[in-house]
Picture 1 (spheres, rainbow, N blue to C red):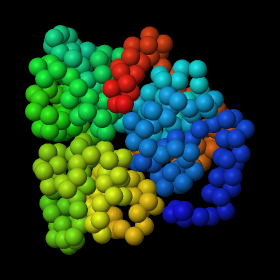
Picture 2: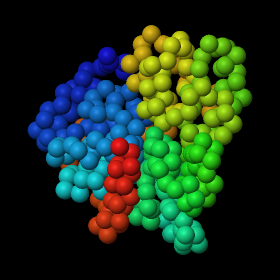
Picture 3: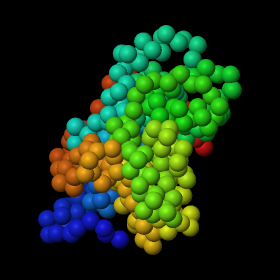
Length: 317
């Protein structure tokens, strides 16, 4: 099912991408927040946990990671012998940027008796300072597996950390970072949408602020929100996360209505991540054609960062 607008140029790009992918034994992976045109041609679409799992087991020679920088780094760390391409190297992450490795290292040193848990939305350098990496899809499960009296540092997302503290009864020490997309949703505007759509259920990502989590019918990762929408029987949903997920929700549940929640900005009806939207069909084509931009990670950092990523994958089973 193709939901994005077709034209001869994009059709030609798709054909060339398919040809190059076959010639180079490449796998195109895309996060749920990518443009519709990217999700349409991807071999695999998922959240951060699913992308990491897929990267770890693929037999492709080339991985085209349609996401942001930390996702490309994670794929390269898991697959050091493969070529990992990131179509746009300027596709950063505000949450990862909120956690400077030097400052985080000092924070960790100030609390030497704490286990360090880092959200996957971090640089390889921060992961190298970490004991366990988590995603929004497995953070609660992993924290629950640790002893109840274990002291924990959680970074960098304070909203996700607060959510995990609330649902597990922990008192993790939180780094003060946030995602610029999820941190700017408007509770007032969502309340207005609820009045306009009284049968709609509210789906909220845990990177959102606590007041938004409290009004949710479901709090979860992008994959968890998609699963809920697929299995639930409500006719409408107000979706409080980056609007790219609407493509897959509408594809899998065409009979249901999905309403993007607006940010706290005048005149804006949906909430998009500019970084995620930097990748385009043409940039994917050029990356496959030219074999660049290629993701590289310092060997020493990669070795240190691999351990907490592998530990995450093991604890997620």
